[in-house]
Structure formats: structure tokens, C-alpha cells
Length: 204
Image 1: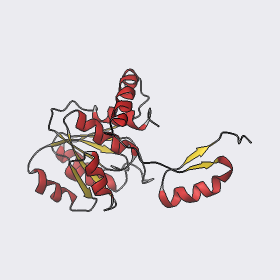
Image 2: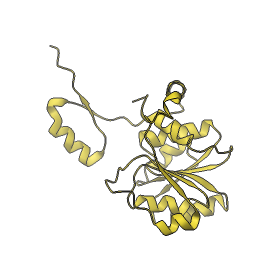
Image 3: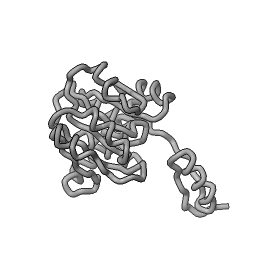
Image 4: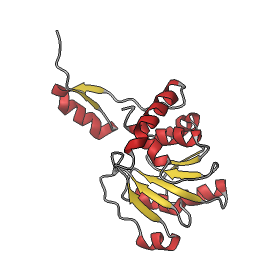
């Protein structure tokens, strides 16, 4: 997992060359990728606006280094503006898609880039075209194994290991189920989220 989620987070933060102090907004902030975005952004002097679904996640992400953590709601853009004023938000990271995308578009400002890297909602990416046009927002889809990103993998992997070792990045754990317990694992997945499957044979 260290070579996937954190490296993805590092690449997403590098999607746009931003000066120190710039704001980045993301959803799915408590995911492995979202936590990695917070850590990599902080290392590069960037500030993060993090949209989550549950109140209990706020303090945890703030302790990790998130600058702003807000519960997703229709007024999230107004709440962001109350905190950062007229500062531009030029990079958005969408790991959810569907209806959640609209909250990112509300926060993003003129000329922003929105990077779509996941579809956790199970819904397609269907942004309001009028909003994209009015704000001149560019959208792009991301996959970490595109040729252009491969040269960055080793360095970002090493940086990820350092951040974890220094306690600057903690990834959410997931229960491990044996493959024979797939039905139980699936039930947990549907209720709580990610699980890991162990396909190693039992050794007695």
C-alpha cells in the first residue's frame, strides 16, 4: 500500500505547479490518498481544504496537518470563503465523483484545475458544464501508471516511507480477511469500507 496510495497522493499534489501558501481542495480526505495529499502538500508548503462526511474525522485530520476540515454540505464554499477570504483555490482533487464533485466546483476559483482520480460514489463524473465554463475550470482524469508519472514513482515512494517513519503520515488500517471468508469480508466492505484479502495458504 505504501507504493500506491501515498505515491498517488504525491503525484496529485504535483498535478499543478503552485507557489507555497496556495490552497488545494479535496474530497475523500480521510482515505489513504487523501491523507497522503495532506502530508505531501504540507511538505511543499501548500495548504489544504478537506471535505469529509463525518464529524469525528475533523480532529484526526487536523492533527495530521490539514489546514481546514469541513463536513460536506451545500454551503461548504461559503464556509471556506469565511476562512480564507478571496484567496484563490486553483487545484481540486476528486476521489468521489457524482454529486460530491459539485462541492469542489463551488470552492474552486477562476482558472482552476480539477483532477479526477476516483469514483468512490459509484456515480459518473457529470459536472455542471455551466460552472466549468463560467470559472474556466479544466478537468483531467488521473492514473498513476501513465507513462508521464512513472519516473516520479521511486522518489515519491522513498519520500512516502520517510513521512511514515517520521510520523507525518498515518494511513487508515483495514481488517484482513482470509480468502475463504470472502462473504464476511464483503459484508464488512459494504458497511464500513476497505478490507484486505489474504490469499496466502494456511500453514499448519
